[in-house]
Length: 109
Image (cartoon, rainbow, N blue to C red; front, side, top):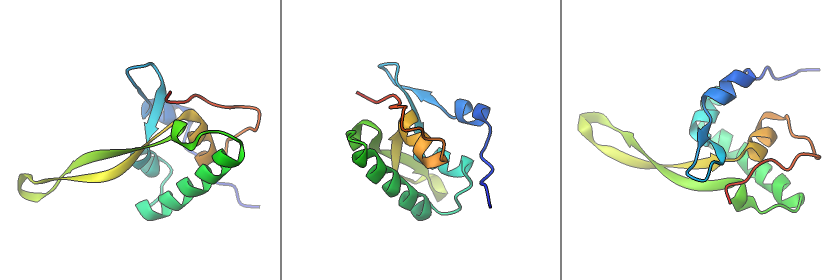
């Protein structure tokens, strides 16, 4: 059987953010890199599956997956907004395969 080698717990703690309400969250594009997804669209597919699981567990998807925009720098000083997402610990657990049905995780609300 093949097992995915996950980054260490410290890796996730290093990329964690805390919002103005004290809720912890992770940016999906940063997590994508930590989980070694080469393409954003492939990671989005995993996010969509995690959203379905969240809803199936009777939770509000928006409490765990919040769409946000992020400005990136382009050539010659130009900037462009790209889609990103704020992820709760619950969504992080789903995306890393460490989810336990007994844990509800934290939310953004």
